[in-house]
Length: 197
Image (tube, rainbow, N blue to C red; front, top):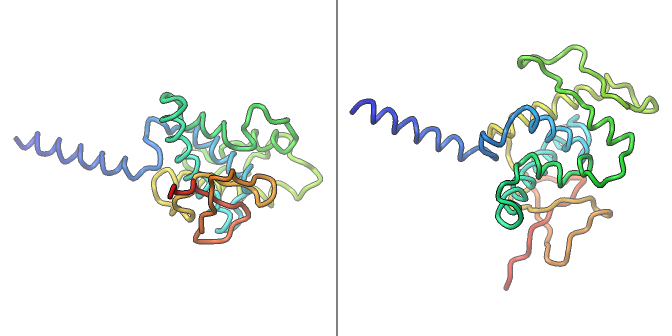
């Protein structure tokens, strides 16, 4: 009897814990963590400020929303990682490969056994015309860490209800979208599908 009660409590605790995660554990591994962090650098840049990290997290929440929609309407077996690749500028397979995309795709895991590497490996194709990698490495570490905290459910969604994001001028939404009022102003704009009257 005690074993049954203990097992039931354990199952309830695990169910509660996984419900709070943005994606289920079977969709999360080192490859997904790294791909999402790279994608967010491509969409927002490095997480050098709290606002940048919050905007990156808001995009991650939109990706979860899109993943659920794609599973329902397109491919029920699509992984979260496949959605990350399909919807982020630095990962789209049909995009023209620029040097920027090359260095984003070569950003390496900045940790080893949970400890920050010193120095942080510079990505291949890093442009010599920009500031030195040492100035940007802390932002890469911050983005990578934020993604880990986001997966654990420890990061707030600053644009609740958003199902799309895009640049202010280069990625306007379709006519059935309306702007989401985020809890902070970001460089990207966030949208949701208009409710039918």
